[in-house]
Figure (tube, rainbow, N blue to C red):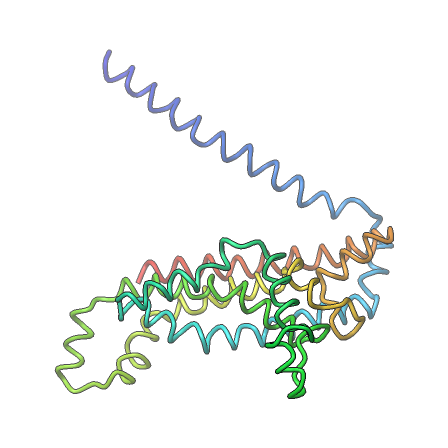
Length: 270
């Protein structure tokens, strides 16, 4: 009798524990997929063929590729320090590098806008040397790097933390240099995590809006990224255009997230 009662309780628990996330999942799908049914198929296809739409997406794609390259260049050594060189400096570095995760993108964009402006000593210095951040793709790259690189670093650092230290120490005793250990052992072992970090930071860069808008100035073909284009067109009531580009970004994000989940899962298996 006791075992039957316990079995029923476990069944009820399993049902409840599955129902709650399933309801949330259904609501999420309904809210996101509803955009595909807001306009007619013919109008949707017409907007998809709009050259301006693809220019905005192409600009976002180009900027996100540059952001990824910078993330890898900065993120690999930073992840190495945070994982293998634990001290007071690395702790401070960890806190500062993770700060963008807790800040609103709007604050980050505003800070870059003020700092890079002509009235700020830092911005004035760069402007005097021919480097402009405000209303340029360079400014967009800066804010998107600040926002996306913590995602890359956290994923890669987690993988670095899981590497067997005894194996690395054994490699040192056999004469391997720090460069050999990093490029021949640590990075190959963490390759799936590296790809997962790239996928996540790329997706975050492609979808960034608030910080980008603060520094972009919304100049067509120069600083009008895909998310900004959605906001501008929706503000003027051009919903078919906004729906078309939003649909593309949803599909892109879904694919990117699929890559992230796949490589993240593979990384944890290893």
